[in-house]
Length: 287
Image 1 (cartoon, rainbow, N blue to C red):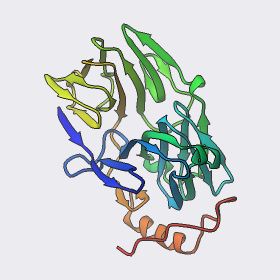
Image 2: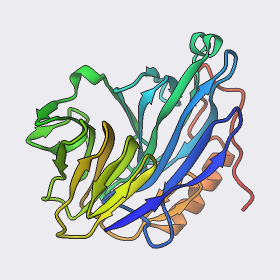
Image 3: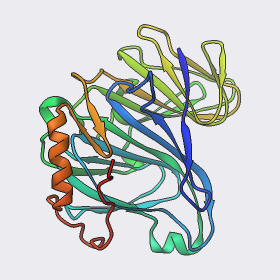
């Protein structure tokens, strides 16, 4: 078992993002290739998040919030506000661009922001799938309540339930709320498993883990989390990716030459413009 701490960076207005995956020595957990933990932060009226239009290939993005809201727009014409407990799953496939911004009403009144942005690598056979977007409301996600824990299956299969989010890989992603003194065992049928603490304090493997820590379990190790205080933990993992993945900026692919192609595509705006957000964009990094 290992305990990972994200590398935090300040993005302005007190908003900090911690990059938990990838790290040296821990590039992935199951199909998860990227994991950013942000907040909690209180935005004053007039402030918010503006992630300008940018591209992706070869992956799916998962936005999951605990507090606040964001408005997603993409080159397919999707426009969707996401609120706590909902799932935004965007499949980039052969190429898409999207933006995520604080909505005008929420920005005007001020708000608290806290959540996770993660990417999962697509199986090699699905890397060039057509881009698509799914939104699943919190109330449509299956929930299991057991001995002081509430387990909501965000994506994949766990605890006898299957999320309605359509996925092409072996994955589990679970939002676990655990009462003080209660315990949760991670699914043991998956080769790679982790647990991200997003509130409170837990113990696992004889060690204490606080907010912002990701616990990585060894293959075959029994993963049990006990809550010292009321806690919230995201449980995640699945089957390892079917081969090496190259990650450069927002692009993920099993082939280096495909990433080079994607660089040219973004320079040429090959993925199209985002309706309603077609003025700004994030340029291709020079390095």
